[in-house]
Amino acid sequence: MYKKISAKFIFLFTFLFTLLLSAGEFRIVATADLHGDLRGLAILAPAIRKAQPDLLLDAGDLTGGNLVAELDGGSSMIRALNLLKYHFRIPGNHDFDTLPGAFAAQCRAFRGENLGGDWSWAGVRGTPWRIVTKGKFKAAVIGLTEPNIGRRHLDLPSAPQFKAWQAALHKALEEVRAAGVNYTVLLWHNGIDSFPYGVKHALKPFTGIDLVIAAHSHQENPGFKHGNTYIIQPGAYAKSAAMVTVRYNDETLKIEHTSSLLLKGVPGRADPEIQALNKSAVKPWYPRIYSRVCRKGDLSYRSFPRLGAEALRQAGGTQGAVFICSVPSAKTGNAECFKDLFRLLPYHNTLCTVKLKKKELVMLLEDLQQNNRKYRRIMGVSGFRWNFKSRRLENFNKETITLTVNNYLMVSSPILRRILPDKSRWYHLGLQERESVEKYLKTRRALKN
Image (cartoon, rainbow, N blue to C red; front, side, top):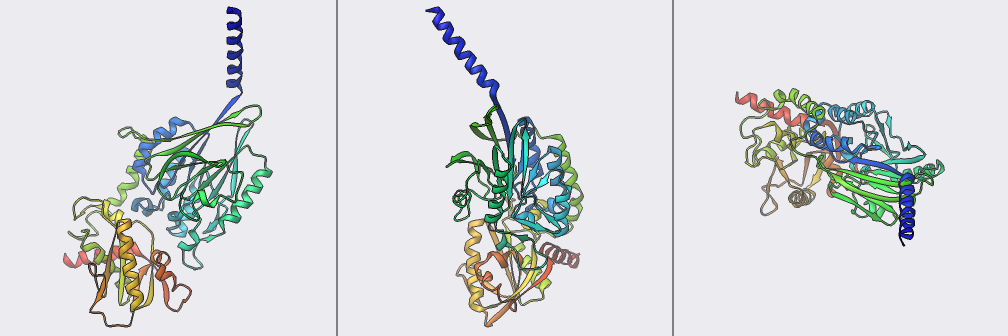
């Protein structure tokens, strides 16, 4: 009896030992939607370093949304990726909301590789895919930016150029299969559930994708299997990173198991290199922003949107203007600090003028007022009076009006998008929205002094 038990034990032990010896492991860590949050990345960085990934990725929107990260041309965020030794990144939709020179400089300064077979801009073209090896194991990484991004940019010679993501993905998958890889990762600046281009819906016609790193919608998802594809999303603002562990047979290279989790940082245990980088990036902009741009009360909920609209109307030389900004993060109505100016003016929008009929203006304002509640934004108008309670124009007897708005509003508003084919009704000024508002506020402050 003891001999039988011993024999079974020895067999089981030998089998498990052999299994362990033949098992390989490939670890992938990814971030997304960092939006210039170096402080958050400093807290998350120790967890990323501890994971010791074979593949470290960023799924886009690295810089858009933080004034410091954009005033230094995004260089601080690229330096952070280089310090952590990221292998690949893709630009998200807000990474294209910058100046062409700054975008090109970011791509060239990155020590990894800029992926994406569906975009090109400022003399830089994304690499459709790359292969990473670990022993005999070969993993391919395909990159794609946001699938609906072509609708976010005006038809201008200086605008980024985008190919259809379906064609780019189809071609990349064909080439990856021909290269004989064992595992295929799609790094995609795209949300999981949105219809019709969200990951779960859009990938139905495609096969051969083992893992999708999703982004864009700012959701956190610890990972799940959808058909034959594993999907995970890291979340936003460096609150977490996605980690996927792929176990495979080291002899046959067949995938045996995939597991995942979201890595979290520990407050008070920030990475010293990234923390120092954050301090050095923020410090030069203190004197430019803090107390030298705005006078007391300019950043209140009530005054700032109206001042922004007046700044746009003055910059565009038009009859009116509409200005949209985020709700200040300060708990008080007044936000006399640089942090809230960062939040109020997060992107490199440029200005346009557009001629509207009275009916179109009302439709635009009604639509904006409804969406602003949903997305926690506030709106200011200049050159006319809009009753926010009754949602109607007051004392407005004109049949048409020429407005100054930013380029993002031109492409995101359904009302304004209808006007885009008629180029006689709109004009791209090319002026920076942030610079126009800052110039207006400085002039206003100087007049008071």
